[in-house]
Image 1 (tube, helix red, strand yellow):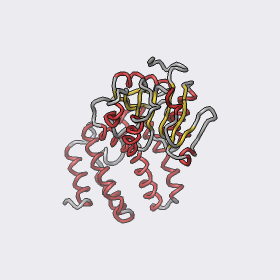
Image 2 (cartoon, rainbow, N blue to C red):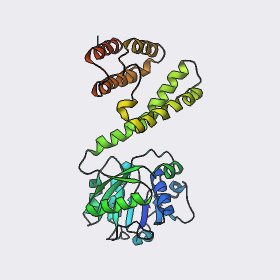
Image 3 (cartoon, rainbow, N blue to C red):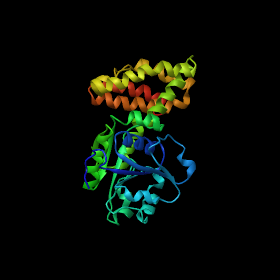
Image 4 (tube, one colour):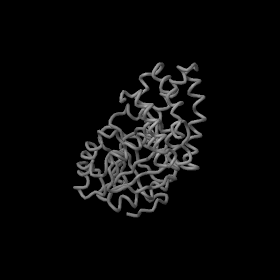
Length: 301
């Protein structure tokens, strides 16, 4: 099978009409690739965004799948292995197909039932936050996609990612759990961190909606700084400059008004000390002073 992503070179079938499946289906279709259809277990699960040229199926795997040569499993993580097993036993599975799953938490080993049938297998995971299919179609072009699997799967995956304007990033032999945890920290937990900060500002006197609005330009600025000048030059604030007095004021205020956020703030302060040491912003004396303040609030005197 050709690994070119020219129009018509791939016939794609997607199993799972969630945010990732719909986003990829729409982007492949708009890129001129042939999306045969999108399958879901039940008709009610196919209520997401659609385009008239895309066909949607529910129930048993349809015979239309037999003409595909790329199949993407975009179900929730817990269903991947079961869907792969059903697919391996399906009479409509083409022998020449490449089957991918799109989870970041597992490698292609979870598709062992397909590999045992001689099917080429791999993973394509978008390193992006996709809250809706509409947002996904906007953000995925320009995003990185980690690739793993057999040689044929990785080569074809690279072409598919490039076809929708993404950047392929081979990731073989690494710790998938650690990789996925890193993605959660940079993506999911960032939302939680901003939520916590907005509630602090709200308790300081602003309405929560206004607090979030006020924080957003700074958040965008920090992300832009990391991208433009790197972590070493983007880090600012009292911890990075060894200001133990200001850190004490912050901790006292959180302890009085937001005690439930104190463990999170302390953990972030400690990690910021480590980062500041690593990039040469703090000497050992300033670190000692900062840790003395933190220990007083963290119950480790």
